[in-house]
Image 1 (cartoon, rainbow, N blue to C red):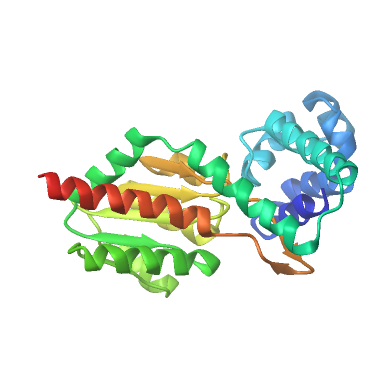
Image 2: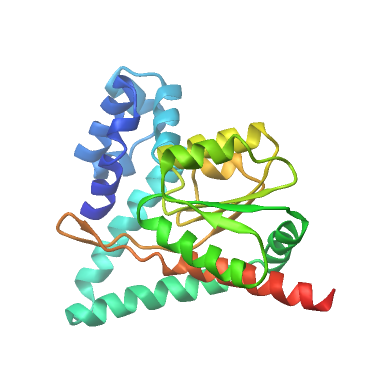
Length: 257
């Protein structure tokens, strides 16, 4: 629960004053929220239900019920972890990585993978959009596509990415990579790309995000939060796996044509 609440606290800088008030209450009273109704919480905070629902969406959930479900599941996971035999430090992280891999592979939609590969074939140019820890994933994928004969790029400068987003057209493709799907810069780029009718693919590590509503295709990888103190050690490899499968499918489809 502490890791989840710590991640939610990172959204404070993106919220209005009322939304911050809601988030502060969620962080301070997670167990109460998990067992509360939307109307009861609104009455308790003297805030409209619409404000609470909007806050939930701003911090990465589809709504209040999704938040409650996540809090309950996180609490159940803590109880399970406490009850099961203790693993060594390294073994526990090996188990986490294995679970991420298995879930991501089990939920792959081959039809969506093929659709994304078709987008690659149909596009004159491909730009990868990723910032922070997601940037290396973009650079690796762009390198692979470049060696396969596709014109593409992955840049690290935010202002340069914004400029590129404003120049792409419906004949191009943008691939946006974001662990949370809520990164401010990525959402800004996605909004620009949508306005310009650019084909878009999102690779995210969260089931619910605002980025999903701004793109044509979304792929969801399973990523569990992992912090060592203040150091974010959450994996990005599930995002890379999905991109690898899209690229492999695109290359194989090209051979058949």
